[in-house]
Image (tube, rainbow, N blue to C red):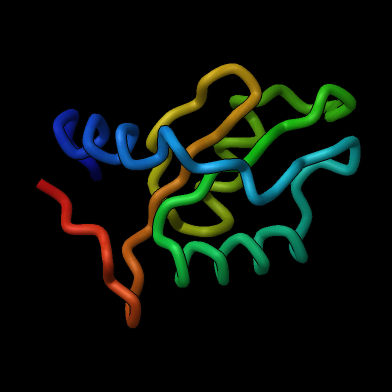
Amino acid sequence: MLTGKQKRFLRSQAHHLRPIFQVGKDGVNENMITTINEALEKRELIKVAVLQNCLEETDDVAVALVEGTESELVQVIGHTIVLYKPSVENKTIQLP
């Protein structure tokens, strides 16, 4: 679990990032979870955009992604989800 201080730090790091994944009307599927997991291994911190045509609520999508990728939910703001997962091989973010 992340502390409040760590979440604030990660939010500041994620501020300038652009969403690299989009969840559309098909919602979250296995293929998407696999791809997001690979991206988290490389980047550790990513943003995911939930499109207007997505049939699921943004919070439900966030929970599905966190459970599927075993990552930490940093923030849900509007239709954007910020995820963090420490990398096994490419550790670049040092948490406070």
